[in-house]
Image (cartoon, rainbow, N blue to C red; front, side, top):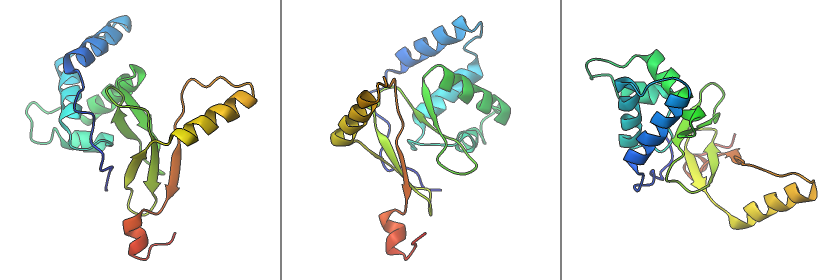
Length: 161
């Protein structure tokens, strides 16, 4: 399945990220195990900005000792809780993850035909969202905008729904 053409921010402070993760784990009475560290390092090495748990499991296929699928899923959940990863439900049956650190706020366009994910930022849209929240006495802490439709490539190939 195709993913976003935008890469992760190359200026992620890996040591700082590991320190943040280890600090979070300590507060939860957990440890930064070798496997958790390997999983975070694989995420940072991946070419994909958006990835599924299965994409990450595939990164460990030829590695010995192997990191189990269950360990990957549990680690992803902990990394989301630690605000290291963002979790998105872009499709009907799978979750997609992306690194939170070192990336500016952005929203997503998702092709319902090929699964391509495009990131975008629009200052006017952000102002409008703030205005709507304010006019309703609402104080937003964060948001995630997802627009579903057909990408240019699929549209060009005749896909219309």
